[in-house]
Length: 200
Image (tube, rainbow, N blue to C red; front, side, top):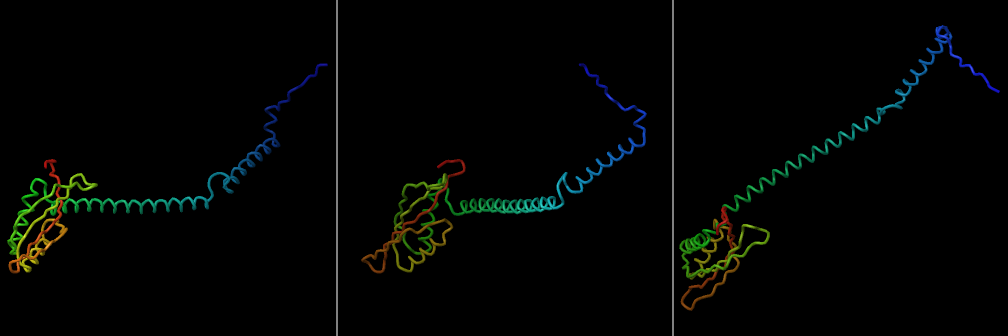
């Protein structure tokens, strides 16, 4: 048996009735109150405490980053300063390979004359590369002298004050049969640097 359904739609005139308008206004106010309550109770967005914590964390991270940047700048400055001082040290105290033999032997000659010791002979061993360095080698020099004790003391002082970076590896002293003359053998180490153009 078929049933008849009627769809009931309120007439436009009934929307203007005070009862309907009051209900619509109350519904609108209810929705507005719910939205205001959501904002008031921080259901939407962050609470002031949460924002305060986020600000504190961001401030701490900023201060840490600034401190790290300051440390990095100091380290960079120290590295640059160390590099400059290293270059200055190398240019002042290391002998260029091209002029090594004449420079060191000339300095030994000058020291022997200034001290009063007689320089007999000098031998230079083959250069030994220094591990970890691409442009430095170690050179070993053996020099024989002859003279008195006071002259020997002067010689050692002069070598100690040398403009070159000299390391006294060994000093052998043997008395001669004649008088107070001593036979002295000095073994020194020094460092040789490659020339800028790479020539030997």
